[in-house]
Length: 510
Image 1: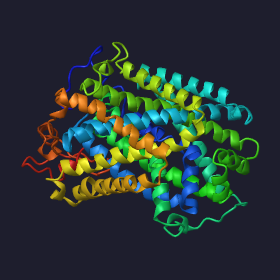
Image 2: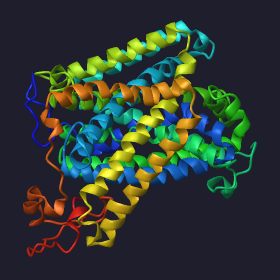
Image 3: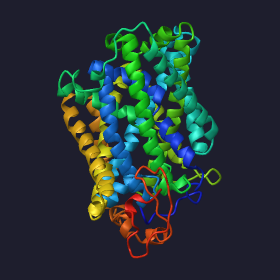
Image 4: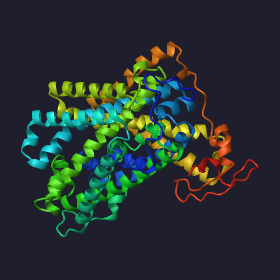
C-alpha cells in the first residue's frame, strides 16, 4: 500500500538488489520453459490434439495484455504484494486480499506439484528405472526444494549468475531440439498452418479446457512485480521483464509443441505424457537426446521452485506488513534483508501438503488436479489486474490511440479472456480440482473477515491515480519522455512544460 507500516526485524527489503537484466531473466525462468514443456504441454495436447499450438498462441495474446496491466500498475505502486496492493487500491480491498491469497494458494500448490517432478528429472539423468521408485523420487525432490528454499531465504540477488546460466541452458536445449525436430525427415505428422487456427478444435469445450491448462504454462513471469521493491528503477524494469518473458516463452512453447507434434504425433504425446520428452529426444538424437532434455527439465524445475518461493514469500511478506495476516510474516532478516519467516513458512506448508498427499496415496492424482486448480487461481487474479489497470486509467484512456490500446483495450481483453476461462471451466472440473481452486480461495475469507473487522488500514486504501495526474510524476515528466509502449527505443527528449509532454505520460516510462 502507499502508506506501508514499518517492517519488523530488518528495515525492509534490500532495495536495488536486482537490475533490468535480472528482471528479464527472472520473468523467463519464472515461466519454467522446460518444466512447462515436460509437464503441462502434454496436458494441452491431450485436451486439444493438433490444436495445441493454437491454444498456446491464442493464450499468449491475452497474457501479454495482462503483462501490460502489471507493467502500468507497477509504475504507480512499487509493492512486493503486486496485485494484492493494486487491486485493493483500484477496485476494492476485499478483492485485493483475495488476489493476494490466490497468489499464495497457486504458488504453494505449484511447489507441491513440482517437487516430485524435480526428483524424477534428477533420476532420469542417471537411469529411467529409479524414477519409478516413489520414495527415492520424493526424497530427492524434497532435497532440491529445501535447497531452493534456503537460496530464496538468502536473497533474490544470491545465485543470480547460476539462475541466468540455468535459464540460458534450458532455452538453448529446447530451441535446439525444436529446430532439429522441425528439420527431421521421419515424422508422424506433417506440419500445417491449420494447427495455428481454429480448424482442429472439437468444440468450444476443448478450447476452454486447453486454455485453462495453457494459462499455467505462461504463469510465473509476474515474479518480477513481486520483486519490484528490490529492483533498481523498478517502475521501468519490472514491466519490461514481464513483457519480454511472456513473449519469448510464448514463442518457445509454440515452436516446441509444433516440433513435438510433428515428430511424435498427438496420440503418442497424450498416451505417454511422462515419457514423451524422452521419446522425442531419442528420436532426434539417439543415445543422448533424452538425457539432454531431462537435464533441461531438471534445471527448469529447480529454478522455477526458487522463483515460485520468491513470489509467494514476497506476497506473504506484504500481507504481514499490512497486518492482513500475522505481522510476523512481515519480518525481514537483519543481514540478508529478505522475508525469511515468510519464505520458510511457505516452504514448510508446501512440504506438509506434499507429505499429506503422498500419505493419502493420491500423489499422482493431486499433481494432475493441481494444474487445473492453479489455473483457476491464476485466471482469477490476472483478470482482476487486467480490470484494475483500466479502472485506474479510465480518465486518460482516450488521450491517445496508444493509451487506449495498450492500457485499455489489450489489458481489458486479457481480463475478459481470463474471466471467461474461469467461469467456463468450473463446471468441467472434478471435485479435487475444484477443492484446490475454489476451496483454497474460500479459505481466504476467514483471515480477510477477521482483519476487516479489526479495522486494518489496508482496507482504507489511498486510490491509485494515473501518471498524468500523479504528483510524483510531475518532476519526472518535466525532464524526459520516452516512447514505445513495450519499452523499446527509449529516445529521451525534453518534455514540453505546458502540462502535456507531446507523448502520453502513461506510455512514457521507458
